Picture 1: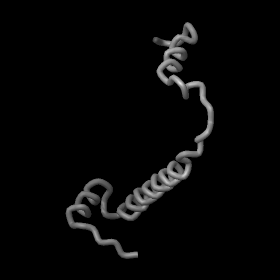
Picture 2 (picture 1 turned 135 degrees about the vertical axis):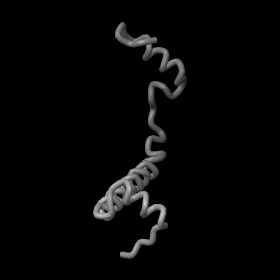
Picture 3 (picture 1 turned 30 degrees about the horizontal axis):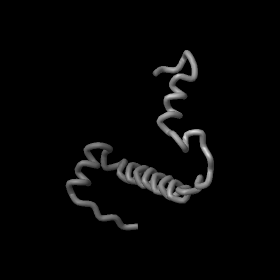
Picture 4 (picture 1 turned 90 degrees about the horizontal axis):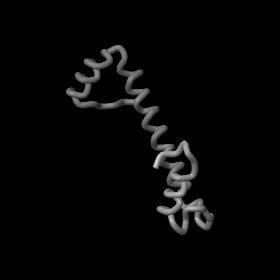
Length: 77
């Protein structure tokens, strides 16, 4: 693999992690980025999967929230 970075990025990278830690740092950032991308893929795949479900809050979300706030002495609101 060959990666080209601007000189100012390499200088900042060296300042933050040192020239001997470049690969580990870049590898960690790529791992995190790929995990984020996978999370978004999972979220997008799940969109709409609850269609047709019935929830207590469907007809009146604001009323449901009010009822939850006053449901017990420990609740705020």
